[in-house]
Image: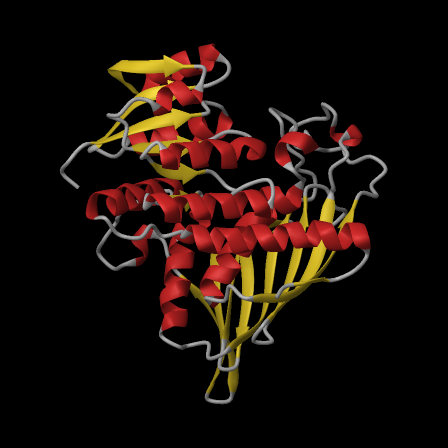
Length: 361
């Protein structure tokens, strides 16, 4: 990772400042040389905080894409614009990291996959929960065939009162949905990744908007929470072509006593099971005719005599992404995998609207 990778940032809002730019800034061989936002002040601020001394600022992403020194682009805009910007960037000879979800619609996600194939450029999606130490351990554990055949799973992203009310989160036209497309997308991606199963057969889903006062107790305040048309909660059953069943549960607002963080899932196999809930990894198995549960210490200090530094999933994601560029290898999250996530999420919305299951060919 010696050579310098020059990056352009498109979208300098919350996710850029909270995740991508700090992580890229911590990687020695990365230079952020251009910043674009429709609000120029945000791009100027980002350039001053994270850019090279001569970093350029744009309000039109197409002007940024003309810069031939930029090798990689991070697309960090509202969901509606993910596809158009990503496709344009790929055809402008840039590798692309696009923040989750892949796109507002499955059709747009497919356009992104097709563009990556046509141009030969790398495309990945920001599903950083794959990079958690719990997820990395679980993946290796499963690949060692410790669970046997995984035939049942539950993916969870449940907030009791946590409806985001800034930016365009409550704008259905810009975002495409509520907790399904916002936080359940992380849990579903991780579940499919750990199962290594991307062949859905049928999806039956139902969204809910029933609460009388969803704004009451909301951790980020009211600010339109009660007036948004988006779903407050949803559940779905996903049957895969091999017969495996996945139950999905998600909410921004739900009268439940047990919130479960995004990126949580339960996997049950023919030999054993595991769960990642609220960043705690538990293994479930039977030994010597006794039921056993083991909580795995995945902290950096979990190794005797070594007080290592725990890196954030966002930093691990950024480092692995840049390494894939330098080494010319596949990124951790393949666009074809993220496309299946988008297909299933869209099927949940469609099933809820029609009252019928959605079948895949």
